[in-house]
Length: 106
Image 1: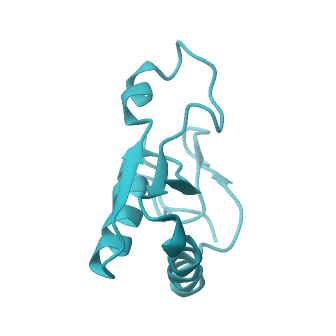
Image 2 (image 1 turned 180 degrees about the horizontal axis):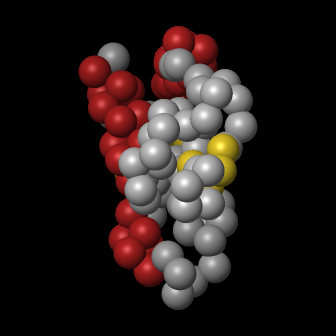
């Protein structure tokens, strides 16, 4: 068994596992049990969910599939912005403030 991916959250880990399994590569997600303890345990690669390929001989094939997935994934351009109404900071993909609903300036 070989680790091939460290996810940002359990949902991303399950998505990657699904991509691999749809290509016939058996995979397992580990580390989701620690997700609920975030804030109580240190956050980092040791506590993030990971995806493991069960057959080491298919690890390179799995990494190639993930490279294709990441290349085709849309990326968000820009920087976080501050709401002119309430001062809340929002990520660039949002067009309205999540806190008060004011539209992004510009």
